[in-house]
Structures are given as structure tokens and as C-alpha cells.
Image 1: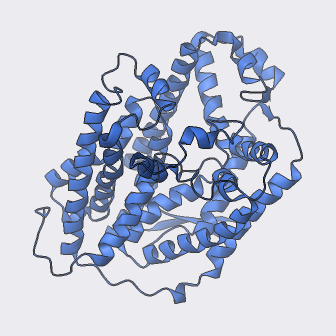
Image 2 (image 1 turned 180 degrees about the horizontal axis):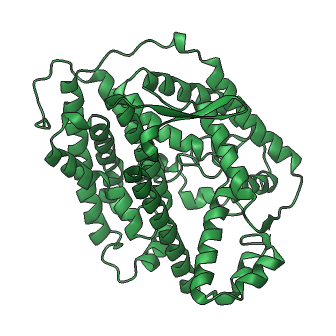
Length: 445
């Protein structure tokens, strides 16, 4: 199975960052020395790359081929778990958190953001289960030839729930995470099930990407471009609604340039042009600028983070990064810190500090060692995905998304961790599922 090497993915992530950095009419400000934070960031990335390179393909045992019967059974199990989680999550949204019964979804979301366990025990339990519906969808896509069309539609209905929920609540990150993961797995599925010529993209004689030529056909390009345009306009609408909610108006630059908020300086010519636009064009301009800012600001926020923290040896050793799991145990009565308490260590909240920011909060400079073993773990999944192991193919679709966005955001944080948990559980399920189990799911065509 063809898969993009993690080294190339992180290189691609950096190229995308460079591209958008040249597009934003913004100067990012910070206090303190920029040298030490950038050295730490560089060491994190280099340690990850060394970890990837240090693990040789020959040292990985060839995974045993999985019978199609076993794959269908596990898909059925994940679908049942995920569908139950979706139904419970909808119930919690109506009767516990109130997000689905609220007259103003955005206002209710703001209120819930400062609270712990707004969905109660039902919400916590559903959060652990509903990602399995998405896993079932990935499995069905990867083996789409082996499933009935009705079964594919049923799995898809529950599998895309996280995307629908995020859209309903006016969010974007989960849409980006799951949408990109779907693209990676769909691409792997086509490579597995279809033979076609490919295009090779190189930079300085280094092969960066290999893509099938069918992607250049109108029936593929037009839907992809349409989805991208719709997402851009959706993002513009989200930002416009938020600015309207806070009544910023034309004073938005004054707000964003405040030191304790965006902490940026806009180009004067850009601001002069902006004030000449109509209200519609202003919303469009700010929406596009905000999208570019999402790609760029993480590196500078990492610099600010390192300069703001007193300790370089780390603070929470995993509890900040994977708080959603600690939150689950906190619900059981264990004396653990809430995310609100953990967040007090961070001077600038609700910003992205690249993939490595949470690592630095938890482990400080010792995160460099963690990055090495993270690289080896990713490489192991990558190699097994190339060997055609079904659970590793779908898992690597998720990991590839995490890596290609590593210069902007940490997709292992927050609710995204529930999907990481589901993928890790899936590896164990595939490994230990009884080979002679008689149960057969009626998924065949």
C-alpha cells in the first residue's frame, strides 16, 4: 500500500507554513529571546525525524493477513459501539449539556467551554464510544467492495456524525481533522482497489508526493474544489458570526492588536484597503485572513509559550496533553486537576502552539526524548500500513493528518484524543479478536 513517509509529511507541513506566512499582512510580536524557543522547536522536530529514520523496515515483523470475515466482524462491532455512542451523545446534548436544545448554540457553547463534564456520565461515556463510528466508516471505505451499498450508507450516516456535530456548533478543527483523515484513507482505498497511472511531485530531485492521475479528472477536481470553497465560506461565516456576537465592528483591528489578545501588528496598507470595502467584502477579507492566521500563528505562540513559562523541565508530564483521559478518571472520583486548573499555567489560552506546545508544557526540554520515541511509533505504524495491515492503514490516515498539521496545531489535544483512544483500542481488537469466531455481520454486497 502506498503511504506518504512521515519525514515528507513534516517537510510538507513546513512548506505550507512558509507559504501562508508570506501571505499574511501581519507582524507577530513577542517578548523575550526568540533563539532558545526556536532551538527547542528545532530539536523537537529533529528528534522526531531521527526517531523515524532510526527504525528500519526490516526490523518490523510482517503482519499476518487478516481474513475478510474478521474485518467485517470488527467493523460491525465498531459500528455498534459507535452508533450507541452517537445516540448517547445526542441524548446528552439535549438533556445534559443543553447544546442541542438551546436557542443560541454559540452562546451555549461559550457557557459550556468553562465547565467540566457538562454532559455528565452519559456524555463522558458517549465521548469514548462515538469515535468508533468514524473508525467503522474508515474500515468500510478501505474495503468498500466488500460491503452492501445499504450497509455503507448506514455506516456513513453514523460515521460522519462528528463532522455534522462540529458544523452544527460552529467549529472547524474537528472537520479539518476528520475530513483530512478521510481523504488519506480514501486515497489508500483507491490505491488498494484500483490500478491507474500516477504522477510524481519532486522538489530538488526529492520525491515528495505520488498521486494518481485520476485526481486531475473533472469529476474528482470539481467536487474537491467545491468542498474546499464551501469550507472557506463556512469559515468566513463562523468568524463573521463571532465578530458580530462580540460587536467588534470596524474596531476589530484595535481588538486584535491588543497585547493581551492577538498580539499582532497589521500592515497599514492592508488596513487602509480594508476600510474601503463593503460590509460583505470586509467579512470575506477577515475570514480569509483568519484562515491564514490559523496556519501561521502556532510557531509564534510556541515562542511566547516558552518565554512565558518559568520552568524548562515541564509541569504535568502528560496530564495537560491528554487531559480528556484524566478527566474521565476524575469523574470516577480520583483527585486530579481539572483542565481549568491546568490551563492557569498558560498565559495565553485558546491559541495553538504548534504540535509541540503541549509537549513543552508537560515535559519541557525532556520532551525532546519523547519526540524521538513518538517518531519511532509513527514509523512503526507507517511501515505496517505500507505492508497492507488494515488497522494500521486507517490509523496512519489519522497520524498523517496529525503530522502534516504539526506546524499549526496539535490534533492529539482536546476531543481529538478520543479518536486517538479509539484507534489504539482498534489495534488491540484486531490483534486479539478470536480467529474462529462464528458471528458473521451481514455486510456483503
